[in-house]
Length: 484
Image 1 (cartoon, rainbow, N blue to C red):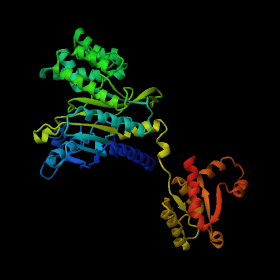
Image 2: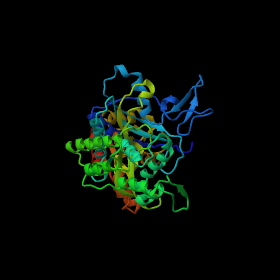
Image 3: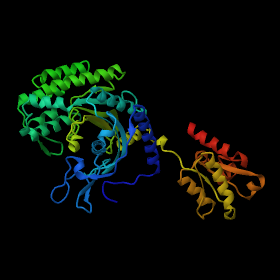
Image 4: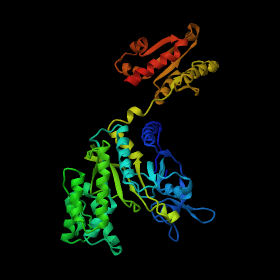
């Protein structure tokens, strides 16, 4: 298959389905309603990813239609939302609150755990610039993390503002349009604080940095005074977010944009605090930048704080599993009218990997169906009726549809992950009985039996019950393993 794509099998799909259901429940409790947009959009609707003379820029998978217009697989779920809002603006309630889930595609270099197709789950509020909408998005993100099973202290919703960062850029004299490239280099350095530490960031702000492999990354070339201002911003101390923000405000007091943004963040954190979300759950973090260019105000990032082992066996923090922010100019690309909006996107695949790392995804992967073995092919209707009895009781079940014998059928059931099989040969029919073989318990017991004669006589975890008790007997097996 193409590089950067993968097949997803039953266990992972079931685990993801359960996870999506829990996220959806939180989003709907907050009053967001579902919306589904197409996987393909006109490329110019995706914003900065526009085609050049021969092909689209890197970042999206694109092709032309019969009218030679460029089409692209969606890069995220936000740009399609902006297009939808613009097309339906007059009839939508304002604010408009929607959630969306689905695959997105990035035409980027794949790597370990980084795929070109992955799932996102978004919630957005469109049509208000009230800072309470941003606070609510942060609360939603925190509640979602806990609904998925992460404990307080295992995650934090980090908050910053692109306008605060703009204030810092103005304070160091790189706020003008002619400084766009240099400003981007500074922001990239700030974004690496968690990975490189303050000393690494200081080098990237100044002359540059050589990594362990000897590769050199050119720095922003700031003066010592400029570097000191950015470092003071990143290391601002305080008992809480408000106190840290007061220190930041002192650094950027000449920037009206920056000081207004500081005030907004103080209000956001206060709203969260008053609603029962202390700053251990939702807090100010000056290093949060967010990569997409359309963010215009507060930005958010959901970070897992616990440690796991990577492929090299090194202990590392799991890091970011979602992010978002305010984007007040995105809809205007379609209408020319400013429409404020804010939202958050959960990285479903990364969340699933985090749950697996914490041992919380495997148990939800589900089991295969109960398999009714076929002992006599001339009696297929009877075996099908047994399967239908189980299905009518809402128990996943199937009749074996192959043509192999008993041993192969048992192997098939084992490969399907079946909790048990139903056996009814001629002797059982004569007695009006069925046999239920618990495959999970049988595997455990048979591991302790070394003699084949003992195994045949013990018939581990296999019981005979009246046919009328088929459903209740199977339910007993399922319940035993649900408890276990």
